[in-house]
Image: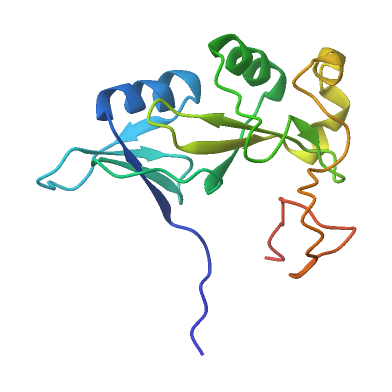
Length: 166
């Protein structure tokens, strides 16, 4: 059987390509790269040598909870910047949290309303600014929906960060 081996790119639909490009370049530091010559507004960005973000402008509706998760290199700076911009969204998945593996997670909305999870490397847990833990946007513990439906694959040792055995 064939097996999926990695995510090559994520495509997000945006309502204003220029605003979205500015956000992903200036606020998240992504590098624009050439896209194919599509007959609709699109922009490609590079996360690293193997993964990309593709933005395309359409008049679509946006998901309330569906999101992409982006690891950031400086959770302290990004937290205070996203708070300053007023784009941290606590409605779909709750407040900013520290996950059991030590990673901080927060959810923000891009200019088109797409939900983007920003997370830190768990190894950086000792460098998290204590002011984040005291902020009104922070809450201890993982998100609890109140649904009490525990289906799925779960573990007390879960993490967002899996390393290859290669």
